[in-house]
Image 1 (tube, helix red, strand yellow):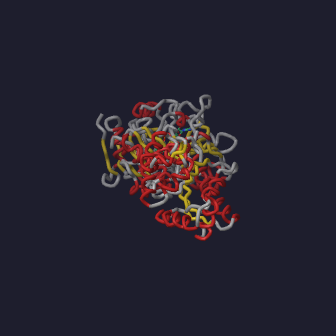
Image 2 (spheres, protein in one colour; image 1 turned 90 degrees about the vertical axis):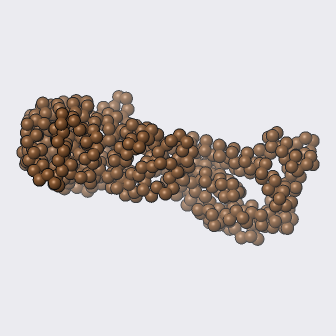
Image 3 (tube, protein in one colour; image 1 turned 180 degrees about the vertical axis):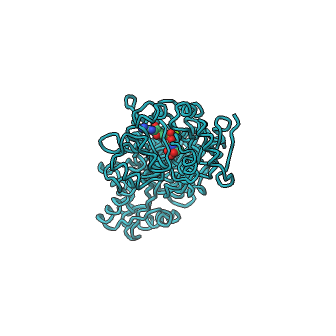
Length: 544
Ligand code: TXA
Ligand code: MG
C-alpha cells in the first residue's frame, strides 16, 4: 500500500483529504498533543479491525475514541456522571481520557469487547480539524507497532507504519510526549488506570478523591486482571534491554564506568551529559518531568537507532507528570532495576573521631554496616604473601616468633616519609582491592554502608562513595587524643598529623563535621543520616 504523507502546515487541504480517507473506512495517522494516533472511524467495525491489523495489536485491547466537541460525547456513552463532566470541562481539549459505560452505537471491536468506552478530546489543532472535517468519532491508539515506543514525531510513524496505512499527517513534534491520562468512572471511586499528561494532583484539585491503579508502577501479579487491558502487555519497549538504576548520582556514573567495556549506553538527564563515561541519550532535565515526558519515547527510539543493546537508565522522580514518565520507563525496562544502597565515606585526621562516628552510624536504629579500612589493613599484613614482602622491605626484626610484631613495624614504617611510602606501596593495593570488593558487595546487597577510611582521598576510595564526610576538631585536641590512645610522645603525634595534612580532609569532603562536643557531634551525624535515608527511600520505592 502506498502511504500518502501530508504536512498540516503546508498542505492546506490536509484535513479534508484525511477526512475522505476516514469516511471511506481507511486509516490515517494523525498528530495529537500527546503522541501520534492511528485513526479510523470508531463506529465502523471493519475500519477498526484494520487498526488492530496494522499495529499487530491484540484485539482485546480497547481503543480510545477521539471527539472534537462536547456534543460528540453523549452519543457514545450511557450517561455522563457530574464529576466526569466536571473533569472534562477542566481538561478538555487535552491529554485526558474518560472511561464510562458505552452506548450501543460503539461497536465491540472498538471497545475490545468491553461494556465501556474510553473517550478523549485532543487539543492539537490538526487532530481537531480532522475529526471535525470527518464528522465522525475517531478510534485512535498510538500509531506505533504494538509493543514499540509510542511515536512523538512524524518520522517515528513513518518508520513503523509506512506502507501499512493510507495516510500520515505530519503535524510536528508532540508537545506532551506521553499518552493521555486514562481515568475510569465505572467503579465506586474514580480510578486512574494509566497515568499521563494530566497529573493525579490536577485531577484531585477538580473532583477530590481519586485512586491510582497499582498497575501504574508495578507489574501485574500472575492472578491479577488489568482494569486497563493495555497494562498487561509488554509495552514501549525498544530492542535494547533497559535497566533502571536506583542509586545515588556517583554510584550511577561508577556503575556506567564499570560497564563501559560491555558497551552499555546511558539513558540519562541532560545535566549528566558532561559526566557520562559511556555513550548516552538524554531524556530531559532532571528536575523537569515535562521535559522528560517530551523526550522519553524519542530517546528510546534513538537508543535502537544507535544500536544499543544494554542501557542503564536514570530513575526519574515520580511526582506530577513524572508518574507517567516512570510508568512508561519501567514498562520499557520490563521492571528491571539495579539498586545500590548508599555508601558514605568517613575520613579525618587521626584522633578526630572517625571511629566514634562510624560506631554511631552502625547503631541499630540507623542500620548502616561499617567497612573499616584499618581493620582490613590489619588483616592484610597477616596474609603470607604480604608479610613476606614486608620482611623483605623492613628486615626480619618485624617478626617475633615468626609472627608480625606490629609495634616494631609501626616504628620502622612511620620513622620517615620514605619508610611510610614503602609500607604503603606493599599494602595499599591489596587493601584497596579488598575494601572495594566488600563495600560494593554490601551496597549491591542493599546494605547502607559507612566506609571508615583515614586515607579516603589519596587512595581514591572517595570515588566509591556517594557522600564523603570529614570529621575534624582543633589540633590541640587531636594531639592529646593521639598521645593518649597510642601511648606515643607529643613529637611523634605531631609528626603523624603533619604527614596526614596532605589528605586535605576538610577541603575535599562533601560535608565537614566538627567533633568538639558529643551532643552537637551526634546531631550533625543524625542530620546526615536523615538526608541520606530520604534519598535512599526514593531510590528503593519502586523496587519489586
Ligand atoms: O494520548 C493518548 O491517549 C493516545 C493518543 C493517540 O490519543 N492514544 C493512546 O491509545 O495512547 P492506546 O490505544 O495506545 O492506549 C489506550 C489505553 C490502553 O491502555 C487501553 O487498554 C486503555 O487505554 N483503554 C481504552 N479503552 C478502555 C476501556 N474501555 N477501559 C479501560 N481501559 C481502556
Ligand atoms: Mg499505545
